[in-house]
Image (cartoon, rainbow, N blue to C red; front, side, top):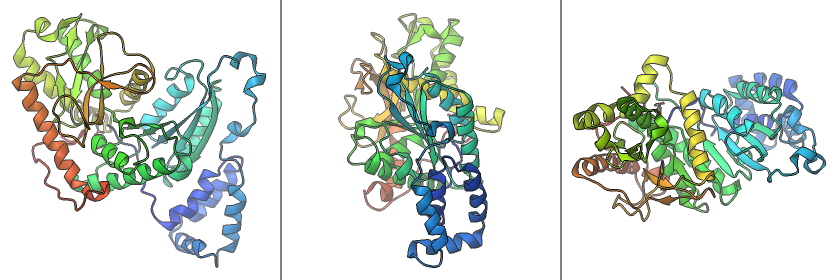
Length: 437
Ligand code: LMR
């Protein structure tokens, strides 16, 4: 899915800075001014010595002092008593939602939807744990300030930071949006490696500190393989809990089918996106329905379905980037909401939704050990089952094999990050990551 800026945080300079950022709370002005000092390269060198317990004693002392402060932002540091508030008597237990890339465009749409109650419901109080980077930290403060100013009753806590080990603490949902965008001249293998390292680190952090049943939604591209890396680095969390966002592709496919059939899009159901969130993805018109009828009975133009429709959905992200000059943000946020709601509300009878999930033991014969978008149903408990009653024809199956081959190649390319040996990158030349044109 679309990308948000993120700086990998592996240096000791980063580690020093994060003590400030994660302990932001009441001391925003002081933290901000100190951060300016710490952003200077020569200071970052000195910061490294903090870990050796010498030279930087005053800095270390300040760090310790700040660490004692609650890990919260502004008004969200005030204590409150849920029991004392009449209107909250029927509320559910607070849930912790971690969001990476929290200062990016997608999050800017998403966070306010989460806080409003439209995702988890009007009786579900939430805590938002926002992960940013050194570079985006001030913007993250701005996001937190806007959340404060929105006076959302259900938003009970907001904390911000740049260390996933702190931000992911007790997370019950982790929405991993932050990823590095592909720069000019950057090879696909390089992008897989750079973002893979971020998701390996975040997987480890989730494994160490998140709820044992955390649900993880990977949005940062290449989201399928990032999700694979993340789950492989989180062996104590069920692999089934990891999702790569392909709901935006499903929504795009529904829109195109509705347009062609001349119906409103609520009449389009049973749309599966198979495979990778890339130009090899397969929008399935064989099993999809319009007004309860198979699409092929309503849209008789098979050539349009196989060529124009399929390509439009596959390349929609790239076309949007050409128009906007940046990745889709609002529609991605909406699709994250849809994807979460599909897991926390029962799937309507006879319908299903698409999600990129771990293939282990799938009923279709797709290779095991990759994250592949498939049709799912949920009872609304956060879990899902794969849909068994789907049909395949030669066209659909040959397309599925192509996207499967791409994901298997991506998997080999990140073997060094999944604990599966030495990476060998031989990516199919005729396929593209989302957003590439
Ligand atoms: C999209 O599908 O809109 C994005 O994933 C495109 C991109 O590469 O950011």
